[in-house]
Length: 181
Image 1 (cartoon, rainbow, N blue to C red):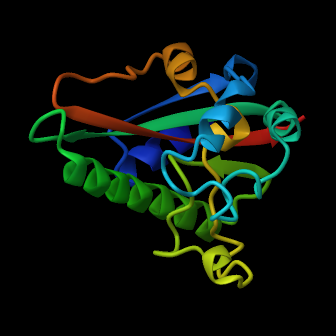
Image 2 (image 1 turned 90 degrees about the vertical axis):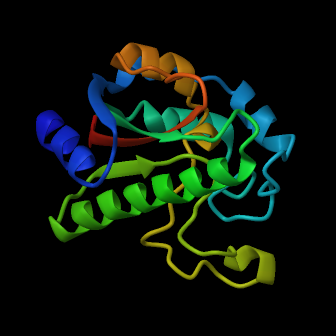
């Protein structure tokens, strides 16, 4: 499954992808504190973000129930390091790659996996939570790696992927875990 999933991520538009044992995923509850600082504006405003996604210790324990993972990344050029619009556009392109991968996994009838992506869920332009409505697409909604306590920098190192890919670039990550223990 490792090689198949790496190839599938690349076919869906990932720049690079690598398999690693799930026990090599670096986890730290401090990432929930970063979410709680609400720099992105999604804390308490998105079903797939904290605190709604669940208790950080339960989420980290859930990661440990899987045996394998594929970490994938998209790398995007920016005009300069202050190109906020370019970063937002790159985030949207990464979300499209994640959604394409999720769709392919569903179409193939893949079961027993968990898919995490970058930042909050991007399936809807505005999360239904902001309108006090139930999730519109619970089967497609995707939590962030950080909401599960994933230290993306250290996990990328474990997978042999670069976290920083050159000046005037932004890199986003996603991960599919499978093989529940």
